[in-house]
Image 1 (cartoon, rainbow, N blue to C red):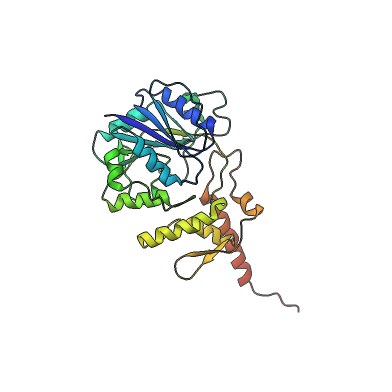
Image 2: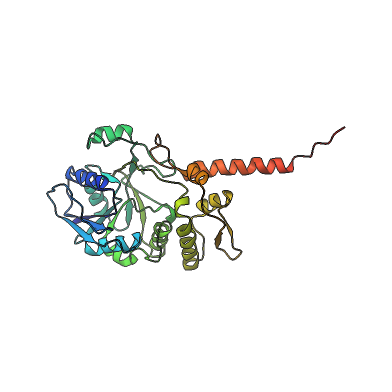
Length: 313
């Protein structure tokens, strides 16, 4: 079985270099690395024992979904392993995916460990990465066996997954109508279910996510989340990204339009950005923590409005 690793990149040259360094430690190196380059300049990348092909897409506004499709089309192998540019593959990642892919069909999602800030300052050190990385609190843990069935398509995440090239073709790739941030992964997961393709958690196939600042819920992508939620609802007849939209509503950023969609009320303020911004001591940003805080604030406000008015004697 031949294996291509595919990634997308815009900026973050150091992160991409670390991804390549990680692949150089692979116990089973890939046959190639395909980089969909979403900028006008090529990357200066480390030497490898396998070819690296940079597919130049430029800065013409191509979306993430379409860029993944381009990378998949350019890949020449039987098995496609997709990694986010922020990921450093563990030495066993490629061979772990090869092992599960030889057992049958489906889409497999490997483990992810989140690294704190400065974890990569002294280079690639997998022993240290294992010690300091943490699992995302909102993601499932590894299955007890080699694979475990994922029963909720909304859990699909393009950060670290693999599938046969023929399966990617059968699924039709990612829907390029999802422009900007949000929705394209959930749509792909929904497509997996609709095509009766098994969706699996895989034990191992671990990637280490490199630190970068982020916002969750993604208020900095408010417009695209609203637009992409509408595309998903029209396509599948059901809503998506409801936890994000609930948070945006509690923040006073959006309200329902009365016909299943959402209307933006205002632009995010600095206070909104501060509330959702990942702090430097946190290895990842958490939508759930922010939503819990917002729900608690809303509950206190409701309690205060229901309290009896004080009257003077």
